[in-house]
Image (tube, rainbow, N blue to C red; front, side):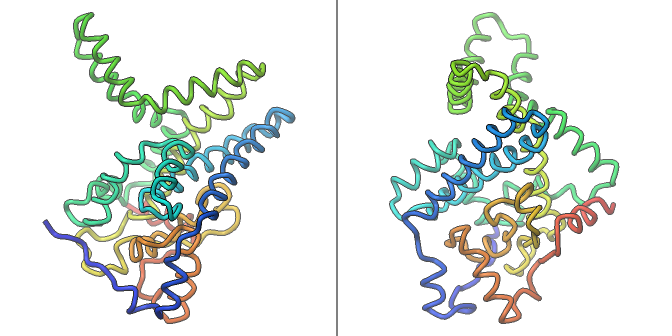
Length: 307
């Protein structure tokens, strides 16, 4: 098995620069998690008060749902908080993902990034595709088909095998165990909104963004990060892509500096909020000219749909 090549921070930064970049914060990660939830709450409140804004609210909320995943990803690297117990608790219970399962999987991705053994290679290998193929993928995302397949496809496959009545209950129990965090948290959220007389707001401004805009921005993120990056690439500066993001893209597509993905793979110890500073230092030293770098998400999509 071929482990991906690594870079040494001392080749790019002074000891003082690296000390600052790799430092842990006891409040920045928590503040970002709070910011994410407050943005979701504000978008919901605006949508309830002015229903004409609901489409925009769906976009903001879906992007911040991706934001929660990004912050959980930082927790998987132990970068969200210097106290490991706090880091893991926040990553699981306030970001809402199975941190331990994700960490095991994700660290394999970093170990073998863009190598044959990379478990995420399946996400980037199909590209480039035709423009029609990309449009079909986007339609599936925005109509909820991608969400349903990812969330319930495994269950549907098992039920299609015509199990006995007894085994149906076994299948359902196993599926509940597999998705207990998702199912319980959403049931509790729906119950709270029902108690407030706003049951529709949970469906329209939490589940609908999760089923539509979140799959789309997640797909765009995956394309931007690794699509069209050479398989078995030996150069660690070209294992992942950094995509320049303007203000609108950061608001609706790429929250919490997720666009600095090449820097993340080069220096996995860095918290997301330190990636822009790392990029600036690398740019000052001419390093970014050798990195996989694109000027925006539109450019990346054009390349991805150039087959």
